[in-house]
Length: 188
Image (cartoon, rainbow, N blue to C red; front, top):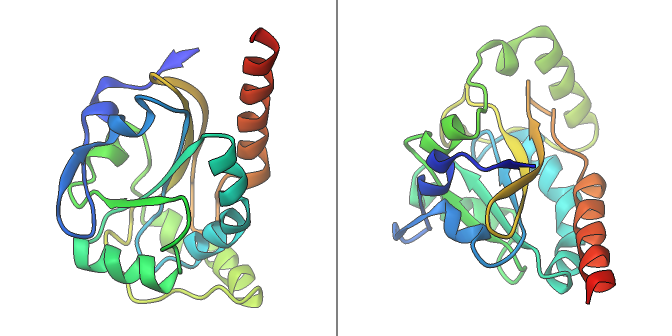
């Protein structure tokens, strides 16, 4: 398996108060799912979180940390956490206004991924399912992604979004967590 790039582990993220920490602390002691949202007003990201929210308790029982990383200001992060009703769930939220973590993860920054024909079709699909874009809070052109990182930094899964609404299937990521726990149980 491939190791997480050192630049990603060292990338600094902020919480809603502006306090900083290295993103690598997330997976130092436990498996982690890191979800990079495009920005804090992204319709596709709202859909992704709607799929994630019902699985958060299950992931917590499995001992998997979940962190959602955006790229707006700490105040925009706080508003996002409130709007997405993430408080009270076993999920951490952070922001990377410098986009250093996005670059280190190899995530695209693309106008076409935001306003190209496939992106616009995705926006139509999202709207039909009740997910509409809010005010842009972060970098409009930045695309997101999902990483599953095993304790200590082994990269087990990567999905790099190509456009709005292109995100990893949460069920696939949860299956990785279940398989990891099953493998640990069989060794013990």
